[in-house]
Image (spheres, each protein chain N blue to C red):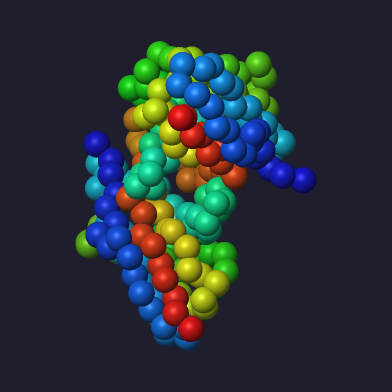
Length: 114
Length: 116
């Protein structure tokens, strides 16, 4: 069965510093991985996705993610955090059965302090 | 134009009532979903429809019944509401996943359901 894990409930970082939000995955075949962001009282917004062959994926709002097959990870990164990046971040993997559903991690709250 | 829109945004109702949440997408997508986000922010799929046909029904009580009148709409009807149904319900859509597994899903803004 496919799954993703986000080991940190919360990540705290100072504005201007680099940030990393961790995600590891477990799939039996090629992974289809996604990052979403949820701002307070809003829906989920797509940030980026892993496409086979590109280990460093660039997405919206200056975010990027690094796919590491040996470590089965897909960590979200940003070189310089903004206070406005404070939100809830979800990693997701596409199920490889006939459901094709998105399976979400438990979410990581990012708090960027001024 | 909102890509995936849900109504209402907030819904407060008493136990035992029946309520519906509506969802519409104007993206031309073939697949629509309902997700439930609980108080701990966990997101779990409830239903998925592809071209008006049900393809996922996760272990959801049969008090929840999705209805897709056409591929742009997926409504959620809930009978005999219970306190534990209080959550945020998200509608989403994506292109035909049978052809493109790395297509992303687009989410509505959510409906916060509170059962009192």
